Length: 92
Image (tube, rainbow, N blue to C red; front, side, top):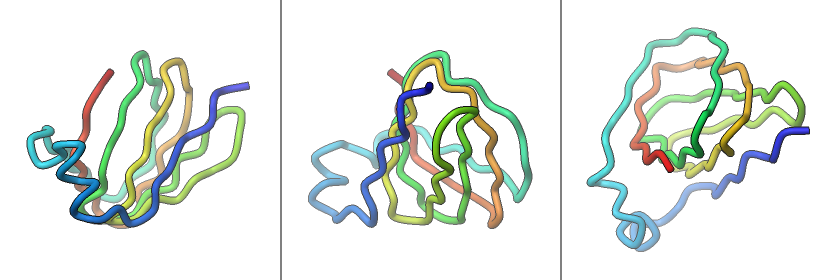
């Protein structure tokens, strides 16, 4: 079984500053559905949009703007972006 996706809902400015999220790269994608594999862990902060990430094994997680999520290395999943998405991200 895959490790779970760790989610912090609607993080505040102090948490964003402590993590340095504004310096992280930004990735954007239109509404779509695709398979993904994490060869390294990734932490992301959703700036806009909504996505449901469903691990091959485990519980689906829906993320919205303001949510911080960490995806474990080795996880196979499906991304279903229901509203055009932008996110800050950090790999590793």
